[in-house]
Length: 328
Image 1 (cartoon, rainbow, N blue to C red):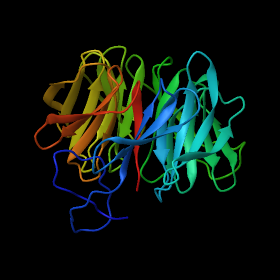
Image 2: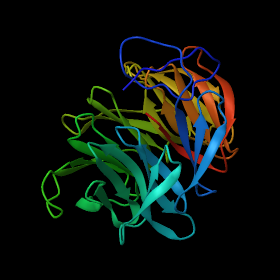
Image 3: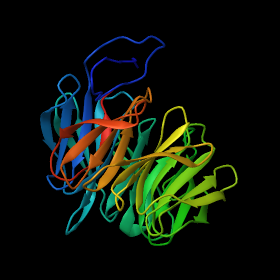
Image 4: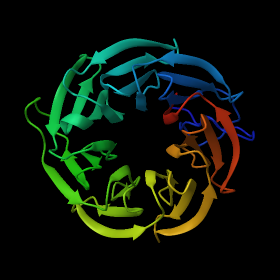
């Protein structure tokens, strides 16, 4: 991988590769537009949409392969329950495979590691794993919890954590390297009401879940799967993201229409910044300098400067933007 940095007002993509920093204007930010059934590709140099790629219905979340060539999109659906993943060739700007998930309805939270794509099936209370090379689902774990929506994969790839909105829990699922019918150990941790946003600290020690039903954050000790702390943060903390250095945590509050910046160590709010029109998805550049916040109600992704703690611009992406990813 290569570190790409540049001195312009906005940043749409920075990816890691070495210790040096060089100015460049290459790469793309990927944004899913839920209402348009598309993935927008945004140029780094112009911060404009250069292409839109059709996906399945209601694309909510996405992940990018380690080599930066493929985007995997969870097609959640709208009025009807969708049951597919779109595999998009980013350079070719087209969908190259539609993965039929059969009974695994409403795929949502999704992450990729080592060629495997992990995803939640919300309506079947399961986590599935798709092997791209083999083009098959090779592992399924049933959580038994209602409303599993977002997931996060531990840095070492050994555990998955799912936020279960209806059951009011986070499930810690041990990733099994065995067969389809041999799921790993599962532990359920009771949280606040309607946990949805979830992330894990870069050192893998803490899992943070945003409880949209009571405006709190639950912090889970990953080693023991027990609650370390729970505290109020806002109205509807719908997404949570750690900065790469683990020092700050960003929370999009769709109820208060704010982006909240917290100090991870003290759990204290550093700043609340107004972000109208349903702020949801958050993506942070690997250098920790910039973040992107999808404002679903306005069709805009806003650029946030993590040094100035202020929004510096907007990108018009499409209708109902949410999940985002990077081209590597």
